[in-house]
Amino acid sequence: MQGVRQEKIKLPVLVSGIRRSLVKLLNRPASELAGHHAFKSDQKILAVWAADCAEHVLPYFECNHPKDGRPRKAIEACRAWAATGVFRMADIRKASLAAHAAARGMREDAAACYAARAAGQAVATAHVPTHSIGAAAYAIKAAVAYSNDANSIIKERNWQLQRLRNLRRI
View (cartoon, rainbow, N blue to C red):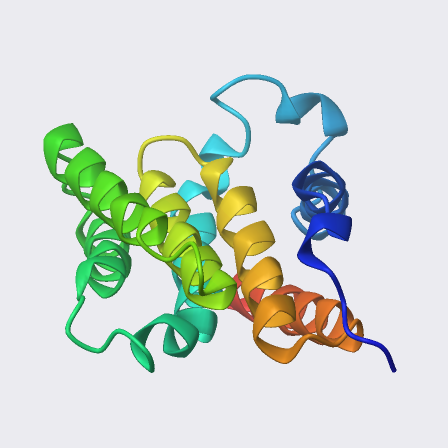
């Protein structure tokens, strides 16, 4: 199979598919997707799921940049919020911006860049639940960039959906 060019994997298309999956899996009407309050009742589940999605691709960042802990710290902040409910916007924002700053330094390493962005989106789920969609979408882009294989889109999405199903059962 030929490699996959990242330009062909459009983020809006991924986001749209992920939204449809969330509506179905969370058994919510599509109208709940409007605004920052979408999925508010499932926010902690989505935060854990987003952290899982980001952590699943984090090795793509850490293998080449082991001394840069910003994406991992963002995931840890997300998990801490989900576990405790303690929310300080300054901490969430700082962790998210730091992970995105790490991504900006990875222009030549697409898998690392997208993995760091997934972490930045994951921690932002503490503020707005729909950031979990961004974490999942960037995780897919990271997996594709790492493997350069079109099948990795399907594999990563299937993993993400199964993980969310498992979290819903807990």
